[in-house]
Length: 95
Image 1 (cartoon, rainbow, N blue to C red):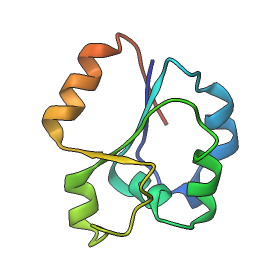
Image 2: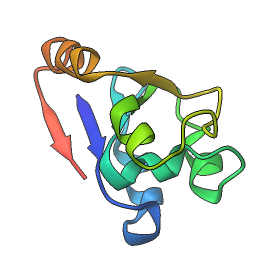
Image 3: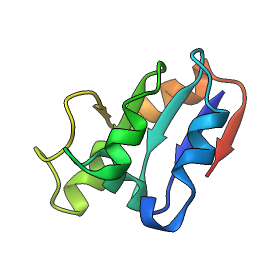
């Protein structure tokens, strides 16, 4: 399953999201959700326990001036990468 986080980590229950995500899933941080990828942030430390890949939409990073400030454990992708993720994961849960 593909999980997407579009809200600021301060406005959602990251712990509940983490409990839902399995090792065969993927997480995409987008819109204000990209704030969860910031290096040394509380949200990033919570996400670091995931065994699945975590992606960050690069266009949203750029729009917020956060390029170069995210954890090296997160993989930046563009919209084409987002489409690829939706093709690989038949189910999607927006958070």
